[in-house]
Image (cartoon, rainbow, N blue to C red; front, side, top):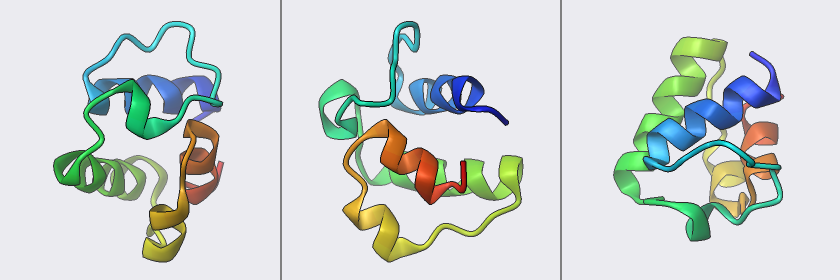
Amino acid sequence: MDKAAFFAAIAEILEVDGSGLTGEENVRDIGNWDSLSVISFVAMVDSDLGRIVDGEKLKSAVTLNDLAAVAGL
């Protein structure tokens, strides 16, 4: 998965239009980043990338690029 596909997957989780996402957006400002979104993100990283999300890194993630780093991209 490249970053564009990753951002599209995040946009789907957040139920927003993913066109034009650069990675610098604050995840809490662009959509419905709530506990269900966090669970969906963790599940997507596990199923699509085969990685386990570090909870401490996830808690400190602010931007979409931070989430990509948490996912190992």
